[in-house]
Length: 184
Image (tube, rainbow, N blue to C red):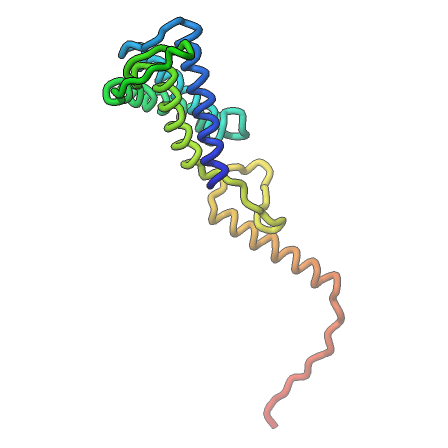
């Protein structure tokens, strides 16, 4: 949990700072208007959705990452609008060449805040932690990838029974003849 928290903070701050620097230094905008704040918030949310949680390059995570990216773009736009509107305390970053004004209008404050909130949400929401699987817990059946969990557990049980039968046959000792006891 702590590792995910730290990773979310790192990813959010990195992506947010990169997008904030692209606005303030690359485009030369000291403050963002409402429309551009929403657009850059959506872009930062899209990138965070691709990277945070299960990233797009992870195995079998392409669809999940694209869905998170779409949701991240919508949430990023909404959060950027909210920071633009309600984060109004005055801040002077002109000493660093990053502008002065209300904190919600400064790209180096608003975009890292939006990206960090989204990255923390996606990282802490991710439940794809690898778990240890023993050799007998899971059996892959070639050609049948759409098995339900009940079928998989039946296959696991059947495989264990076949293995036990094979061991019994290998160690089979002829049994003593049994006598029938009847009434006298």
